[in-house]
Length: 222
Image (cartoon, rainbow, N blue to C red; front, side, top):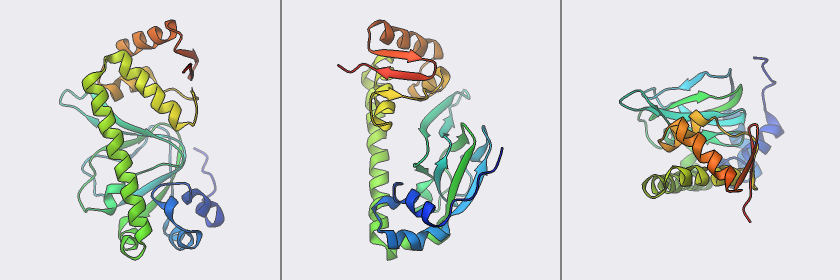
């Protein structure tokens, strides 16, 4: 991969100002934390870390996409989350010293910012807003997990696919998904088969609920 220029200085502060858990901090506070960031680059389909690795720090995504995953007893992939630019992962490393609880792989070339836990953890005490930002992030992750469990327990596959499409469109701020995950990835997120996802997408199209153009999806919410 062609390595982009490291992000530092003002550009780094601007990125952190819109990325949880740093988005609650003042500019002065961000300027103190920014030098802790280490630029790291990964090609597509690379492992960032895997389940059981030492939890060494927090990652923020400057560009690219990653998936957080586990494998079941029959080696079936379970995707816990798919994250993109402006989002972070590995935040539990700031709270405990336990090992990584999932695998993270890149879905595209990625430019990541790594914050070592040993350097960032002391700021949770000296900068109370950072601790609050971390609690907000964890709360949002827990709420999303609860909603996902509710969907698995109460909705059929078509309903789960529709709910996922709504969530993805909401993350992009409207009624459009610019890059739809593959049907295999959707199946791994929803605990079903690729064939059932394909059928559900066709059903939603036939009902006029969505339009699909390649990887682009438009939701018709009216």
